[in-house]
Amino acid sequence: MVNSEAGGEVKVEAMSKGGRPVRRQDLRKALTAGTLAWMFGNVWFVAISGSAFTLFVKSMRASPFQFGLLTSLQYLAALVSIPASLLIERTGQRKRIFFWGHYFQRGMWFVLALAPLWVMSRYGVSQAHVALNLFIPLLFLMYAGGAVGGPAWVSWMADVVPGRVRGRYFSRRRQWSVLTALPAAWFVGWLLDRYGGGVGGTGVDTLTTMRWCAIIFMCAACFGIMDIVMFQIVPDVPKAPQRGAGLLRAMARPLRDKNYLWFAGYIATLQFAFVPMAQFLTLYAMDKAALNNRDVQLMMLVLPMVAQLIVLPVWGLAADRMGKKPLLVVATLGLVPVGLGWCLMTKGSIWIGYVLASLGTALWTGVEVANLNLVLGMSGSADDDPKTASGGTAYHAVNSVILSMAAVIGGLAWGGIAQGLKDWNWTPVAGWKTLTSYDVLFVLSGGLRLVAVVVFLPHIHEPEARPTREALRFMGANIYNNLFGAVLQPLRFMRLRKSETYKVEARKES
Image 1 (cartoon, rainbow, N blue to C red):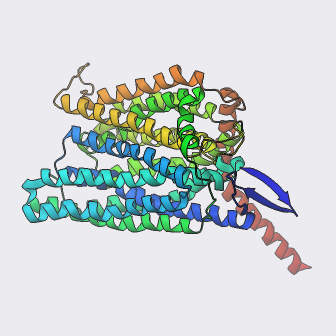
Image 2: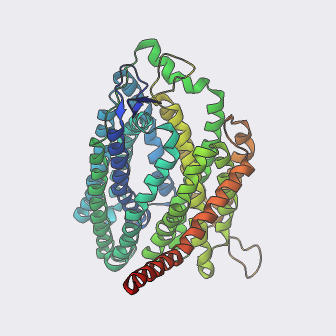
Image 3: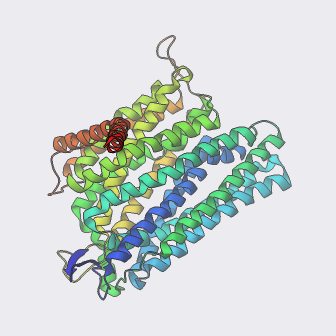
């Protein structure tokens, strides 16, 4: 994207052939709509995650390996992004394909909520395995819908959001979404504890739990659909269709980019180590730490979102000012002790879980911000100049496939380890914690995070990036200033009110 000034009006021009410029007032509407959209979308996301999803699946008596399989489905479905990317490059219809994929994805949650519940209500709780076997392919279809719309959204937004503000815009977008997601996450936990019944008890209790989870999923689907509706306001930046050899070159370009391949190796290793952990941490909190649903939501969703709210402006500003590579170094090194630290959480030290979940999310947010901005920078519309052309949807599609395969293998591997070691335990020191399969997974995750930093990151080149130490000082200063400003804000307000009072009294006396 390039900027031009004509008659004092700043325009953001699409780089695609024949593309019409997005005027400044239209750009403001588009950015506002994108922010409001995710305020609905994040409610959908937190409502279908965490306790509700875990309880729904546990009601169908899923094994540890099946939990790993369910974690992998999202990333296995991302393979659909390759034919979707070909379709987008062939037709140039990014906005239309985005709507096709995501309306289908959000609407599928009505089917996911009702189909397993219907099977178990009609045929009994003893047929839970039938309900689960139905739920798994339906979940795959839901994820596939998102994989169809994903490449279209990334390439479209790369031509809508100016490159100079992407880091700050997407960080603030996520910040605003936290304001709606926080109460939603807490409310879901409270609702399940208050009305959701118990899992593993009588048939009535199991069905009651599933009914309340289904209600949550269907309400979440309504918010998810509103997320997509908001994008009707965002203008469609035309993209020139590609055919024949041009289309093949566009799709093959990421595989010839050595810098991108090193980055892909880094993010794939991190994905393998980090992604499966979310589902198993929720299981660990329920099974080993004996937390109720509200506390699980507080630990896994609410407090981590508060941490996001604090650090997102810093990550976004640092991505724009310092570059992406130093963010990846700082965030990934911090994630190593966080992964290992879960071995220390027990029933008597639940506070460790709250700290680790919040810190882990704050650091992973930095990885996501850097990853999104790197891929966006590669995914704009291609022009005639090979030196300045971006890779269109190809980079996003290839990136999604690499990440997805790493997550699929990770989910299946973690599920297999958890299944194989489900009865294993070991107490290395008398009176200390008894280690289980969960602890093996935590150690494996921490070690692989270190491998991602040591093996792959040194080979990623970003000429404009600043040194890591400078980036760390920059972020530390910003976090300090933000927190210090927040603490002093009440005092400034009181001082301002007192000053206004003195002025009013002086006027009265005069």
